Amino acid sequence: MQTRTSYPTLFIEKDSWLHRIHPFNKLCYILFIGVSVYLLPGKWLTDIVLLLINLGFLITAGIFKSSWKLIWKTMLPLILFMVPIHGILYPENHTVLISLQWFNVYQEGLLFAFNTLLQLLILLIASLLFVFTTHPADLISTISQTAGSPTLAYLIGSPLLLLPAMRERIVTIQSAQRSRGLDTQGNLLKRFYGLFPLLIPLVLGSLIEIEQRSVALELRGFNSACPKTFVRTVFDSILQKRVRRLMLALTICIIGYSVVG
Image (tube, rainbow, N blue to C red; front, top):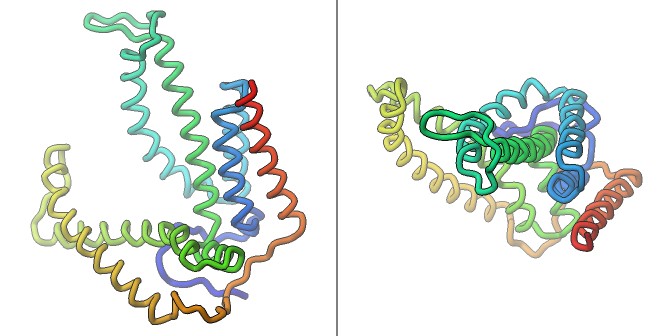
């Protein structure tokens, strides 16, 4: 049985079918979903079907509850910004839906905003499916073993390690600054002024951590030309390889269809 490392990650430890899927299959799925959302015909119907499929994956993988908090925190600012902007200023507006004293809200702009938000929501859920069910060490090991390039593996896998570490550092810095009397709560203006004392320790701490990671990688022979061994291995069945190729083929067909059409 493989042991999980103790460094912070966004990975959620479960034993679902999605956690056992090969990382390359999940990356191909994100590519397939991204192309399908924007290039498949049907628009609203296609987007709704893709949304239901992704929500079904979240539920069956047992990560819906953990994903919901991040989803609404990401989508709510976009909704508050995009809906009024497009509802009022969208260039193709001509059907007045709500008439107010100083401005009008148009149907075309609202439909465009909701459609864009729906597409972003689908892409966000597809990305969370990958991030929450794929351990960074599995991804890095898989890329290293397949491509034979530790540098490429580190470039792709390092954001999955840096983001949760940075999130924990932000919480630590906020607690330290509050203990020194910094007011980070209250109205928007107070939070804005309290942002600058948090940025300097965050940036300096990130630079120090990058240097520490570089030293640790060099000590482990990161750039060595000698053959490397891998502690972690990810199971890749023939069926998963065929599904991966099928998704890539469908993606290419969708792109070709959109170009020809």
